[in-house]
Picture 1 (cartoon, rainbow, N blue to C red):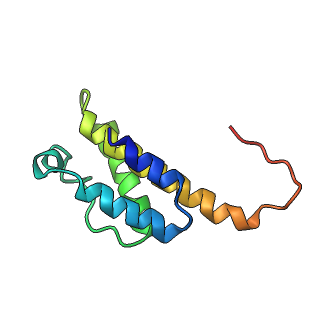
Picture 2 (picture 1 turned 60 degrees about the vertical axis):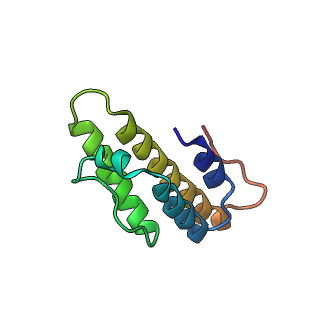
Picture 3 (picture 1 turned 90 degrees about the vertical axis):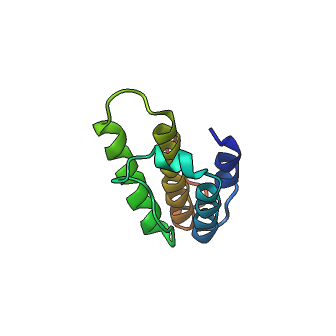
Length: 105
């Protein structure tokens, strides 16, 4: 897996930065690797957080509907799931109250 991009996601300060990392992540894929991702769930142009969420959903459906192990599909699904989680963290940060305890896992 391209773990470098997961580290980049963790350090992103904004939604747009997450989008930029996702664009760079997809640019790293060779055409032969992208061809291994089913066309029905292969991400297209990533412009915003909605595109990231749509890709994560489609990739998860693709993995669930696939038969057998597909490491490249699983890798891409994991990346987009992490990207969605990071966007959620960034959106929640301004709403957190100082001095309040929050449950985390």
